[in-house]
Length: 423
Ligand code: SF4
Image (cartoon, rainbow, N blue to C red; front, side, top):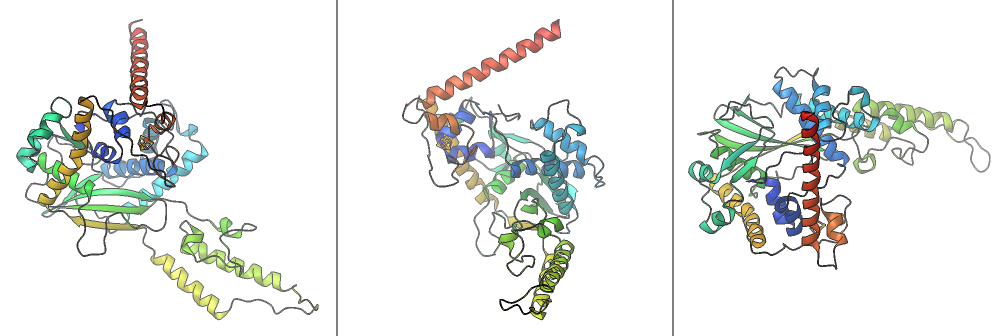
């Protein structure tokens, strides 16, 4: 099962997403609390470690990197990448690579002038709002945030969901503005965010709306304008000189020079590394051409870099030096709009709870396109059970039995721990 502390008495943004996405997925994860653990993908691991590194560094205030590895080590244990008693010596090469990528992304973010956080906002209980879980009951949401749910919805939630919860990455204040920041660790050099930042009318962001309503309900940022920011930072691989100089390197063009094509490179490279690769490959091409002959046996001209090639290289090095590795997208959210968006996010959860109360097993939203959550490996936590049960009509009973087995297993573990404590 997932090593997390999600509490299904409060509706989270993840629950609204699952409910909107697929009834069976929601039924397994939130109706029955059955969440089989799957290995996390590389972007997920780097994202989790990067968030931990950033939070640890922000909390230390002095941007002190001494404790970053320790913070990431704790996160790796919490997420099950390492055993609880592991030390730095137990970090394998893959985890080390992911930790390095996460630390580098956190460093990029903290050194970016676009990030530039103000004073960290403080929760009503005195906790700094950095990766801090906020909870509000329906009463608080109605009274302070104006989220008045229809009676029918409140009747369905009664006894099953007491309010909403969320964990913004960081909330900070500057003058009369409260910033709610969400970090996105991107694996591709194209940092385009999910929020349309091209100007003109844009749709309200679901995550930003959810946080804005929640923060108002707990009386954070009262009287301030709230701005939701998506901070995209590059957390992918960096090409090395060896990548370009290796025999048959896929990063080298048919002209024997380092590629300038973003798609072909597929990862970031520093201007210095690319410049050195260009210089070395031009020299390699020159040396090779000194012995080259035509089909008639005449020596070929020695191949130096042409003026056009030199100009293209200078332009590309300049582009790399100016490349933005942090891309911030801001969204001002109208509170009335946010309240309506949140009501719409909650409606599918209420609908599914009502179905289950009426004895109806929610339906699948089976998608078959390439890379769909139903076909992509580990694209859905109950994918194996869902797909295996197609044609049996037994998905409801299958998930209930698995959830019951899991509860029995947990109780057995608790019993063993209690016996050990009493011995
Ligand atoms: S595999 Fe697809 S249809 Fe099945 S539960 Fe997951 S998301 Fe729903």
